[in-house]
Length: 288
Image (cartoon, rainbow, N blue to C red; front, side, top):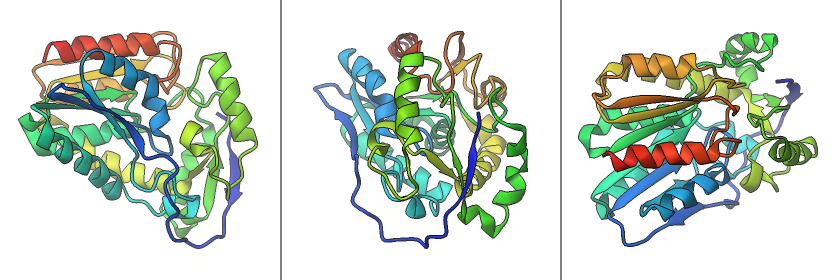
């Protein structure tokens, strides 16, 4: 995945109004599914999956992660603790009106699901980890990204952004072309399209937060007992299937399953096999 290094010398700004508050699909069900988009992503990544699960009889909530939808100078100062707290708050609210609450997360957000499972135990009805990312070892990750841990441990992390390049986690050529058009025209100070496609620029500071989060999650995996479904593409361009395998091997869940996709890249909720992803999740939920 080619990236462009870019320096941003802006100081943090006051948070701007949110551009996308999320997706909420409620009905008469007492079972709620929370779907969490990826880091620098958008609830729109979950839209197709949300409607599919809702049609199966569940309430579905796709919240926006903390500070997502805000200008990049605000987003880059976000900690993993803030991200987790935004998910945790949604989970606790859903518990008040639901008999069962299930939570799924894409990429980095799958790690937040594992934290919920460790903290809340059997209050979590089940967890869904979609292309979980503990470390970046996908086939499209460039060699020079190995320098990122060095940069992210210095103050430079607040000034460096990596511009996303093809394939953007998408194998489907039509969808990838739409993302490419939007990202090719993106500017650091323009957030007009992020509600639909997410951020074209990835702050180095968020890589640092992801590393901190992974270091928090890995030692806790054996304390995860909730039913857990893991779905991972064999051709993941960002995070290899080793990420899911490590989680699968270490969690203590009596009910766990790993589904491998053969025709998708990282963003499995929007790519070629999104129907298969939806079917696997509904089958999993039906057993709980």
